[in-house]
Image 1 (tube, rainbow, N blue to C red):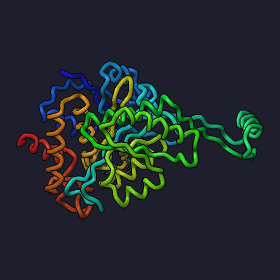
Image 2: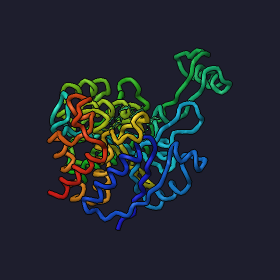
Image 3: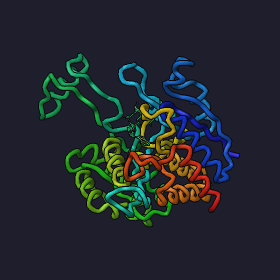
Length: 360
Ligand code: NAD
């Protein structure tokens, strides 16, 4: 039996976590769930949004399925999602984007995976506020050492891209491609403009690619990549990107296949792996048994695959695809008319998926 931490989250989290757990159990996956809490609700009872036992459980088990957690604006409590990524060194964010028959989208036949570096780049949090003494000192230093003057009224965010960080994520993308039987990795950058950061990224990408002769490698400049993904998304397979471009292109790719309700994700690192939907806690729908559980259920399928429970993962994904293709037992957001009275609730959609699993 494999121990997995289930973080039930807040907002719509507990409902979709329950739906997902039931579907995974129906596949026969031999999982012992350790059910833990995080988020706003537990903040009220335990005084912290991330209780020590939740973090300890994830550390111990190395694998967690996590429902969304609200990040309240202006309360001073840090994003739990960012905190978990840093605590567990989750350096790779993996977002498969796949077309499913029955999902309304302008595209069909898309099957690509976005692999985003999660720790460096402009999101590393190395920032200098306009007007601070440190910032002025830095500007002074820069003005002495660079030919391009920076004014005193400037705020500065640093973009660190290291050889180790790039090598780790590009290698991860190739290993993932190999493990999942994929044919090509595309490395995305803006090396023509930022030679010392994106240029380094491209150089390291090429070096790592040379170790994987069986997998095709190509690179694309990020602006061109955006256009290519809109015009010819079927050309792409695994895409590896630094943090900022990865953030933006993940949502672009989710949009290609029907939006956030369909977008699963995984954050994978040295000390563990957390599987979660791309969408948030949608607080306005909390407790209504209304929202679509698909993104978290598909994240569950990714988790099963990560745990080498391949046949259970395939069964789960196939059952989801069948229910969506039939279009009957699906939530409001998957109906042509969002007010369609035949839309079912979160748990009823999970029930329909479980029935399909039993039939496979
Ligand atoms: P959101 O994804 O929670 O919701 C935006 C809208 O998308 C919802 O109002 C709803 O119309 C729709 N939606 C989202 N999930 C859906 C589902 N499963 N089924 C049907 N419709 C769905 O984004 P938000 O409103 O910007 O964020 C709400 C909170 O969630 C914020 O506090 C944010 O910080 C947090 N958040 C958490 C995570 C995470 O836990 N990983 C990710 C993103 C946002």
